[in-house]
Length: 130
Image 1 (cartoon, one colour):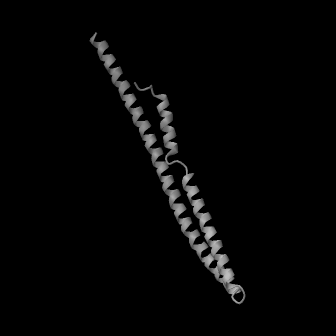
Image 2: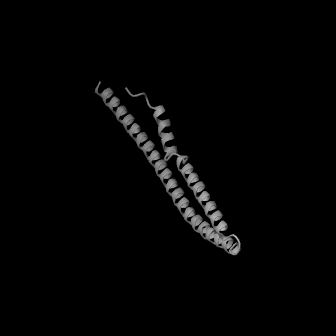
């Protein structure tokens, strides 16, 4: 009888070791996925920031040069009309750009979406909580 208990306790210990190993492996995989999601988001934001700065610089220089060109072209005839029209155009462009930026912020992908989906999928395989 003692041998049977010893075998049963060894089997139970082996099951617990296997279960612990499996849980650690699952946790490790999920942490790697979380880390990958975090790194991808950081890289996306850094790229977006750099591209935004370059775009703002180039567009700003282009707008200034275009405005100067138009004002100089109409200097003798309709310089106030040229300045007023360009002002309205730039204000409209600024409003449109701010609207687009707000839209992009509202519709950005959910952070850690892949990690959350995997965790949800894992939770469906677990027995229900009591």
